[in-house]
Image 1 (cartoon, rainbow, N blue to C red):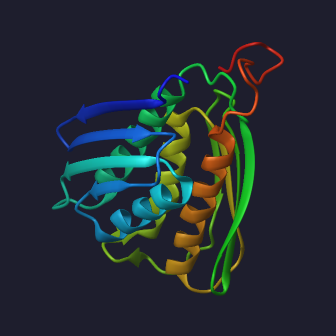
Image 2 (image 1 turned 120 degrees about the vertical axis):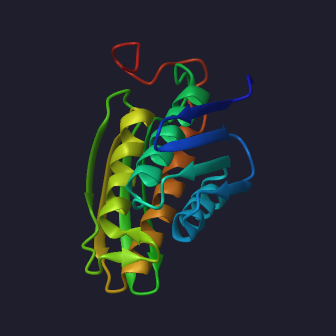
Length: 196
């Protein structure tokens, strides 16, 4: 099987990012975004998806966390899309639930080639560490855009905002693992014969 790996960079006046993935990895990660909470979430994403992720970001954190979080998501989604190529043989669809103590989150994903996101996590706090909770939601929306996937993330129940966010990343990790696995040989998983 052709290695499903990719790497890319993004340089703007707001951020400088380097990222790589190995879809068929072991969940190893080297993450440094300048935002401890985001690093923690991305480490969980790698570990529970089995996708090796390297992501280094230097961002304009003197302004706020928005640009770094948005651009990290855009780059990570792009590099996952690149590694999947034409998506031959992938399962394409997956859903997963992940609990963290009192919180449970459901993720449903379709690697359709069309970007769409619905994220409802019911955050009550404004911040998690140095990360605005609105930007946790925006991370998932931006990731779906460049990953070219339909992504639905819903809080089933929960009280602690840290737990809600971490359960969301873990559920996404499991769904990514299942949706990207090869189950269809050389077939494109679409009645159109193409995913776009």
